[in-house]
Each structure stands twice: as structure tokens, then as C-alpha cells.
Image (cartoon, rainbow, N blue to C red; front, side, top):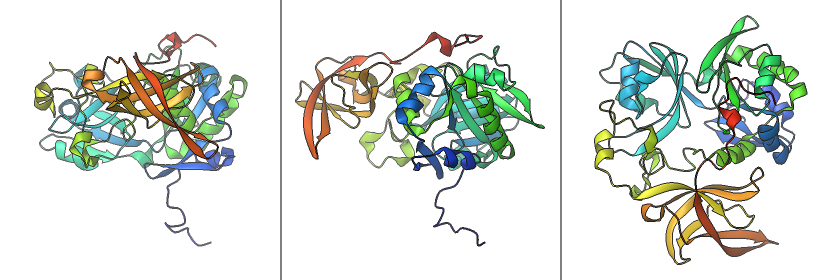
Length: 391
């Protein structure tokens, strides 16, 4: 049999593809970082329900991963990112962001400290040239390891019970910590991290163990409602949790064509991440001088129509912002949204969303009141409870 050529398989397949493709009854695929990623397996409502009421598995393999190691790896990352990496102990995980010299946001991601001198940085976009340029003068080695790591996200209130049934005792694992577990002659690293705002874990191993890990989890999760989920269900959950996505809620600085699309961490509601006392980091001086023109807010919108892409107006007259992500929340029974608004309107007050709803082949224009509310929209104590309660 001749090997498939690139135009016949334009997207890469993850190590879990044999299982995800078999389960994908809708044959619903989308591109993610050059890989084929499932959008919806079978039933969007049931997939979202599994996140909030049972357990779900999501293929994380397309997430871009960098291995950063060397005697000055910590010093390099402290210079690159806005948080204080010196405070991250071995076995810990940090949510972080990094900027260009002008203080404009490049990307957000999670930083794992695997050993004193070795880290893994996971993010949405590819940044190897920027990382290498930023490492000039540091004794550090950087390379992309996306294809060397197979990863699954296991989320939901019964996720700890699934892992217990699979032989991995995670009852003592605290949020943003990780631990190693033996698995069929190899090893699986389990971190208590996720993108749903609920109890959850992420599992990391080598591609050779991907299919055995999938099968083992689903055998253990049969009595706990375990279900594979696609990006569509995960997107609803992350909106409920108030989390941002690079390329959706903001445009990475290197990709911005228009100057007015550039955003700082402060303007994206991420100023709480910045450690101003740790010393210099890329973009620090610019951020200290900057006067934020924009704010990133959570909204509740009247009606039951998702407001994604809606323009925001003050007093139904003056354009003041844009909704970047929105949905009808099955959990909250509300229309919720994330939005960029002009800083003067960050507190809300007389905001309206211009929504176009399809009504029998014609779009109907609706002006719906939008109220600024705190994020996350959805939160539960079980996200941080240690040990997690049985559900």
C-alpha cells in the first residue's frame, strides 16, 4: 500500500486517533495546531453534561509543548514570563502569560516544573523563534516536544473516582500539583489541572502508551459515566469557568496586523498574574508606563440566544466593545459572554449587545441588555477540595 501523501491527510493524527475516530459518530473534526481534533463525538448536550455531572476525556495532544532545561532554565523563564518562577517548586504548575517588549500579550499557558532544572511549557500557539531569541545569554536548551507527549484531560466530579478505579490514588494531589504513577512498564504523570473550572486532572505519557491508557481509563470509568468529549463541549465549560483562549479572546501580538488589536495582560484581566517585585521581565517597563484602554469582562445577556461575535453598545448608540466568546449555559440557564470593552465601560451600565438570530432563513436583529458580572460564572468547591469528595 502506498503511503498517504500530505494532501490526502493535511492534518496530523494524535496518538489517540484510533480511539477518537472510532468514537466520532458525527465525523465532526476541526483543526488544532496542525492536528485533527474532534468537535463533537455524538451529542453535544450529553458531552457537556458529562463534564458537570460525571467524567469526561478530552484529547490534549495538539496542545503545543516545549521542553526547557538547563542550569539557567528558571532564570530564563523568570525573565520571559510575568510570574515569579522561583516560587514554583518541583512538581508544581503555574498558569502564566508572556509579553513582547512593548508589553503586548503574546500567549498564555501552563508551566510545569518537572525537576529543578527542567520545565514544560504548554500553550496554544507556536513560539519557538521567540523563545530561542529570548534565551540569548542564558545557559538553557529549548525544543518543542509536542509529538513526544500524549496527553488527556480527565474532568468532572467523578474524575478522581475514575482514577482510583484505574489504580492511581490521587486523593492527596492538590490543585496545580502533579505526581508520577507506574503504568504497564512505563509511567503516567497526573496533574491536577484543567480547563473546565471543575474537579479535574490531566494525564501525560509517551505516545506508545496512549492507546493502552485510553482503554484502561474507559474500563475503569464504565461505572462512573466516563465519556469522550470534543472541543464544542469543552468550549461551553471553559466559558462557564470564565477562561480565555488565545486567538479567540485576544489576538497574539506577533499575529496582530492592526495596532488597535494589541492587548496587554492588564487589559485582558490578567494583571493579577504579574509579580512586579521579582525583578525585570520582558515588557515590564512598558506595562508600568501603560494606561489601559481596554478591559476584559464577563457578561450576562438577556434572552436565550448565544451572543458570540456581538458588538456592544452604550445606550444602544455608541460602539464600546465586542463579545469574543458566548453561549447559552446549560448549567446556569443563562446567556453568558466574555467581552473586550473600552476601559471607561468596564463597570458596565447601559450596555447592549447587538445580536443577529437566524429565524427561518432570515436574520433578526435584536438589542439585548448586557450586565457586567464577576467571573467565573460557574464555580464549585470540589474544584479545590483535597481530598476530593466522592460524587
